Length: 227
Ligand SMILES: Nc1ncnc2c1ncn2[C@@H]1O[C@H](COP(=O)(O)OP(=O)(O)OP(=O)(O)O)[C@@H](O)[C@H]1O
Ligand SMILES: [Mg+2]
Image 1: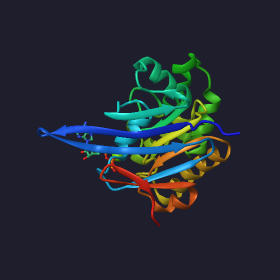
Image 2: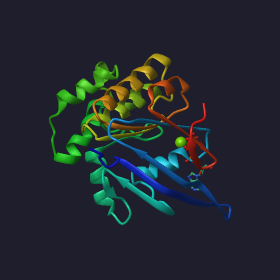
Image 3: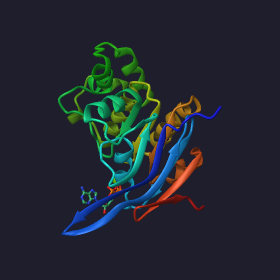
């Protein structure tokens, strides 16, 4: 039986203006990610990868084209509805640290559970996820006491908290050493085997063999990766 893709991006474009000059950061991007698929996006700095991911998760409105996420069209959806969908069904790892400095590591990881269902507990799951990314001992620390790579891993654990149907990760392995990077890709790979859809941006070519499909982004244009 064919099921609808978890991510369905059709001819999406984003036009920006800088110094009075418009340009397309993303042009005509078409992409699907289905259940159990691990899709990787490669591309140079400034090529439009984050712009595309932010449109996929509904944080940025496309100039043209459509995005359907977990069967729901994002166009015209209210901010509240989009945040609720993101929190419930999408594990988003934004570029950069993106953790809340006023919360401990543990509370950062379990925040999605609290936001979606008001579930304060879930300590057990949050600790399991921290253990999976090698940070259990740091559960009670505040982000200011963590390294860049440790903060990346907190953001990854947090993205997995609500057992998302789809993971959208923007350079999740940046600032990680080879072992930790491999561990993160391994976690994503296992989740994909269990049916989760994964869309990951990376510069790390060692993760290429783990993915089912690879795309290149060049000057805002997405195309299947040429080996
Ligand atoms: N809000 C904005 N206004 C104008 N231009 C922008 C804006 N956001 C991004 N850009 C430009 O759009 C292009 C694509 O940016 P984007 O962040 O998507 O690149 P990227 O591929 O994610 O790069 P990196 O690998 O460095 O993260 C860049 O030229 C960037 O400077
Ligand atoms: Mg980026």
